[in-house]
Image 1 (cartoon, rainbow, N blue to C red):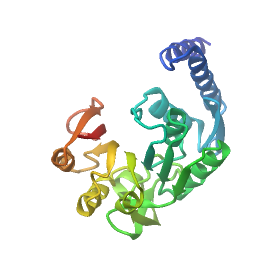
Image 2 (image 1 turned 90 degrees about the vertical axis):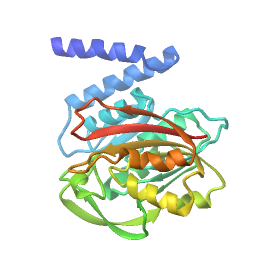
Image 3 (image 1 turned 45 degrees about the vertical axis):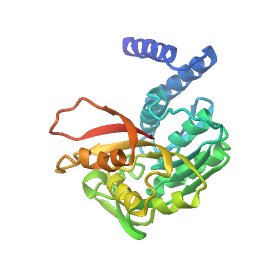
Image 4 (image 1 turned 180 degrees about the horizontal axis):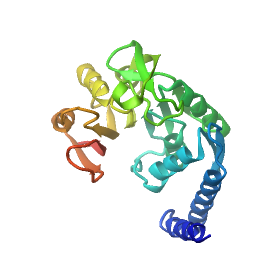
Amino acid sequence: MLARCTLFAKRIWQSRHHGDTPRERAAVRRTLHALDAAVRHEKPGQEVTVDILGHPMRGFSPRTLAYLFNEVFLTDEYRFPSAVPDPVIVDCGANVGFSVLYFKRLFPAARIHAFEANPHTFRLLQHNIRANGLNDVTAEAVALSDQEGEVSFFIGDDPGTLLGSMRADRGGARETRVPAVRLSATLAALPRVDVVKMDVEGAERWILDDLVRSGMLTKPARYLIEYHHQIGADAPRFAEFLAPFEHAGFRYSVRANGRSPEGFQDVLLHLVRG
């Protein structure tokens, strides 16, 4: 009982610090309580739908939904300013659609091109787009790389893992083959690109190589990138990753977790074309 009361008090505190209006803060509070209830009644291996700020979002487990709500909505890490009401957003690594929902709540008229390589996750991405009536959103079940064709994609025993990757040391032991495309081709086909959001579990290096070679790096006005620093036995290559952006005149901010210098780190980059 004490633990539940403490959790309730924590949720009240969190809701007071998220949302610009009393109505928004109340929606955050209801969402947090709904997620807590779903976690308490979790049935392993059973998909679940939870009301997220008034939107039914389906996921592989309530704990995954809670994690995504915290990562995307409570941190506000994908927030960006836009001079137009209908920014064109390319979402690389959309998972089950929390980032898509976040962008559509931020800019209802946004036009979003979403990519998700994990075929199990893509099924729920499509479901959540339809269930929430998210218009002007296209979704493709492909990996993004520096080549076209088929590539290996790795996941663990959980088909809805958040760590699916083209790298076995990031994704897991189960290998499948998925179609791959080059992001540069999508960017070239769009009249304008306001934002590229990228969370691709280690594939960002291959995508960057393609953008540099194709001359498409400066097509987007802004990038929101989750850079995966020192995966497995990787040597540090962060400066090498940033160099093409610096040479192209991008300015940027960096936010990283506080883990030891020797280990893996998630690094969030906001880059804006100068």
